Structures are given as C-alpha cells and as structure tokens.
Amino acid sequence: MANSPKFSFVENAPAQTGVLVVLTDESLRFGPTASKAVGPAKDLIARAAKADGFKGKKNKVLELIGPHGLKADRLVVAGVGKRKDLKESDWAKLGGAVMAKIPPATKAAAVVLDLPEGKVSDTEAAEFALGMKLRAYRFDRYKTKKKEDDDSKDEPTHAAISLAVANVADARKAWAEREAVGDGVIHARELVNEPPNVLFPVEFARRASELKKLGVEVDVLDVKAMQKLGMNALLGVGQGSAHESRTVIMRWNGGKKSDEPLAIIGKGVCFDTGGISIKPAASMEDMKGDMAGAACVVGLMHALAKRKAKVNVIGAIGAVENMPSGTAQRPGDIVKSMSGQTIEIVNTDAEGRLVLADVVWYVKEKYKPKFMVDLATLTGAILVSLGHEYAGLFSNDDKLAERLIEAGNETGERVWRMPLGPEFDKMIDSKFADMKNVGEGRNAGSSTAAQFIQRYVGKTPWAHLDIAGTGMGVKPSEINQSWGPGWGVRLLERLIADHYER
Image 1 (cartoon, rainbow, N blue to C red):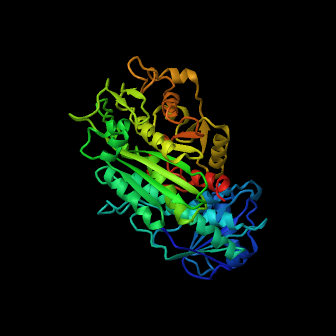
Image 2 (cartoon, rainbow, N blue to C red):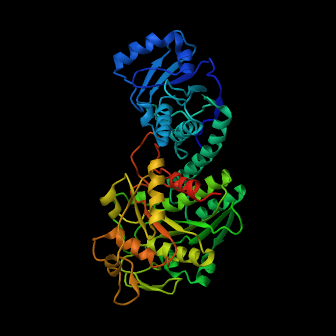
Image 3 (tube, one colour):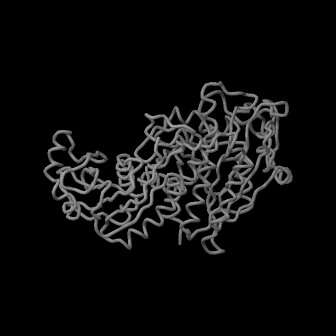
C-alpha cells in the first residue's frame, strides 16, 4: 500500500536511534514506561516545554532534536490533554499529529503508548496507528521531479514503527482490523486522486474487479447488459462520451447464506463536464472527484474483505463519464428508467441522481437488501448548507439514520440529517414525464435530489449521503493530507461492525 509505514506492537520501548515518541498529559507527567524511556532528558523536556509554551494539550507536539542523554536522534512529546475527555477517534488524530513530526526518511521510530492515568487500551493503540498510517499517505506518482523545498520530496521509507503497549496480543488483534480499514481508506483515496484520463469507467470497473483477490465476487455489466435491463437513465448520462459506461456489483459473503445483505451504492461519475448544460471552466478539473461515492464503496468492500467481516454486503457502483458531444443527452430529453418511471431531463448536469436511480432500483429488486445506503457527490447546495464539515444525511428510516449519526460521531466522519417531505417531492413533478431531474430553481436542491432517489427505493430502509463537501477537495487534517480523503469508508465500516455483524 502506497506510503505506508510498517507497524509492530511490543512490550517495551527499544533503546534505539531514530525517533522516540512519548505521551504526556496537561500536567506534563509521563506513564511509567515513558518515564523510564526519557529518564535522562526529563529536565531538558521541562525547559523546552517552558520555552515553547507547550502544556500537553490534545494534539499539541513538542520536538527535541538530538536530546542529550538519549540514543534517539529526535524526541517527540505528544500531548493528550485530559485523559477522561479522549474519544476513540481522538487517538487517530493524535497518531496523525505525531506522524507529521516523523521525517519521511526516518528508518525507525518507537512510540511509547502509556499514560500516568489509565493504560492505553488495545483499540486506542490501534486507532493511534491508524492515524499514523493515514497521515503518511501521499499521492505523487505523477511527479517526475521534486522541488527542493517540497516537504514531500523524500518518499516515506519507515522501515519500522514499533508501539510499546500494555497488552501486545490484544493490540495486534485490534490493529489487524484497523489496518484493513486503513487500507480501504487509502484504496478509496487512490481512486479519487487519479486523473480522469487514467480512471475512466472501464478502468474503474477493472480496478474494482481486483477485489476478487480478496474473495469478493464481482460482476461487471457492460452497455449491452444494461440496455437489456433497461438502465436508460444511467446510459443516457454516458452516451456523449467516447468511454463506455459500466455498472459493477461486488458481493462479500461473510455471513450466513440466509442473512439479508446490506447494500452500499456509489455514484461513479469519473468526470463531469455537466454535459450539454456545461459547467463553468473554473475548477472543472475537480470533477475528476465526482466518483468519490463509488470510490468509498470500493474501499469499504476492500476493508470488509480484508478483515473477513462476518456479514453479507453488496457494493454497487455506476461508472459513467458525462461529456458534451453530438451524441450527448439534451435538456428536454425524456428517458425511461429501469423501474419503468419516466424522467424529463431538464439539466444534464444533474446526472448523478440518474445514475443512482437505475443502480438503486437494480440492487433493490435483485438482492432484496436489509437496507440501502448510497453515497454521492450530488449537489453544490449541500456545500452551502454544511460546508466541508458534515455530509448531508437523508433517510426514510429513523433507526438507520441514528446509527449513521452515531458512527459518524465515533469516527469523525460526521453526518447531519436533512429533511425529506412531500413538498420537496412535488417540486420534481414534470409536465411531460413522471418526474424531472431537478427541482424549482436553486431552492432546496439537496432535498429535491434526495427525493428523486427516494422514488426508486420503495419500502426498503434507505439513507442517502450527499458527500459533495466531504468527498473531495477537503482541507488538510491530522489524518489526511490528500485531496481525495477516502471519506465514508470508516463511517460505514463502523456502522456495519457495530450493528450488523454476527
């Protein structure tokens, strides 16, 4: 996996050159193992902390280069703040903050995970390592030359990061699961970051098919197969492109045969020009990330398969490219979706909901899932409402919605519930067809888009996540320096692990 350090869990901190990391609280106290590890340097740490104004607050880090009395070349003292206030997701952020202080060319680092009040649990240790892993990721494979002042000029070469913990066996077990999740997140990031001339629909389907190596069953529907099924809403989006559209169905069968599958569905618009309703030129290059929902689905399936989750899950993506050409869909066209419902195309840039309409219907009818969750970079309106901090959550099922909110708060991939209702539904009624693909002007754009998808859901419990603000182009954080953050993998993995696995 790209830029990924190698982690091991040990009983005691090894005395070594390289980087030594210890934790401290707001009283600048150390746990017993850390205290022993930094012994000769305690006075030096106290003086440096005073000079730097370091008070051990959460995610604040103090660095000492060539600390006297230690073999380590660099000492990193990481603040945890108040022990009682730490949530599990805070440990991932702390790990990321520490990783930022480990130089890329470091050959070895040792982290002492203990505190003066209460030991660090196996799950907290695993989350810490996950944060380090996610922070280390970089996407720079297309750079042939690196500038001398580029912070990422040296490829990370961490031969070993050892973490000293209270219970090695439990920490290793917890890390095996968290590492699988980290790999899934990075897999999703890789897909979102790829340029559109590399990751077009057929290539996206090919990469999704590589999940077969992990035991995932994968079926790819080509244009002929989709025409036979009547998936004209999806096919209409891609008909102006030189690249053919694909639908990919991934099945992880980790539960009993009798268990209803869970269904996770992603919008995979590999590039979105807006079609005939073409977008402005400014920032159109960002539309390579309009497949972030589908990338999340592939990353999630990777994570579930790698950790051998005891659950049955269907992952489905509709991969298309929305281009203007002589064969492109026009405003005013009417298409019949797979469900038999007809759609007036008012704006060809409202294409993601057309893709989801057919894929959602197909999954609902063929697999009869326990619930469906779809993810899509669907509307600019959700950015106006929630910015980059939350994804918009729309749902016909209170229990599913509550569980998603809970999982979001635990992982830091937060969602905020938004309204559905008959008033919004009426806004997408069409004079010429069963519905139109946009509402009335700019009003309630996210809700009318969700109402459109709901017309293909039936009575199946369902949630729609509008990730236009969280799926791409986000601000850097403690655990992510990538343009494509792989958002949603951790959220949905936690939802499934907490509530739906045997």
